[in-house]
Length: 241
Image 1 (tube, rainbow, N blue to C red):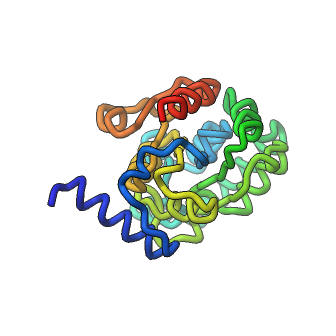
Image 2 (cartoon, rainbow, N blue to C red; image 1 turned 90 degrees about the vertical axis):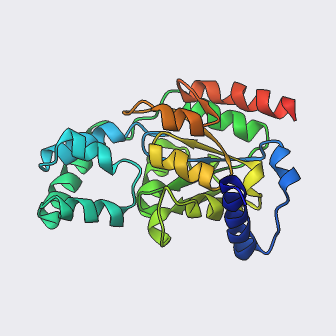
Image 3 (tube, rainbow, N blue to C red; image 1 turned 180 degrees about the vertical axis):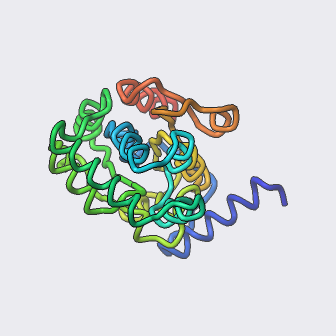
């Protein structure tokens, strides 16, 4: 059995166990019927805010980059492993993030609102699958007025395994009542792209702070310059079906 076959078998079995629906290989050719967005760095330009906050709390820029796309549990493990006082670092980081949000609000990535409006107009449901807490995601949606565009909000904090494992995207697909083959993942982080492909979903990267390397370019179905390009990419892919 090849590595690709083994991966397909594993993801299919996880999906079947979660939903009771057995996905067939011919379903991989389906049109895009749902879009699952990462949040920080993809929809909202918040990674810059987080970066400044982590660095003010004592981390280096290189250490901060290692945190992008990881779950809170994983982040806390890394910070503790680096020898920092986790409680102190978290307190400084939270205070600085809140200060920035109060002063400047939640900044949107270019094309975010326009892409979501296009999806809504075309009857394509959207979900958020984020490593941040669900309360944070809901607050940001309220602050930006984007809540109306999302059918589901899924936090990795509620799952045992975070990205790059596929669990969060499989959970989103289940809640959207779509098979993995019908879903498109939109991500900015390396681990997010890996998770999307591990879920056997088409995955688009819109780079934020870190440009894709050779591995990620090979995994992603496309690398877009911004969310402004997303509607045209989906139209093209659905037209090919």
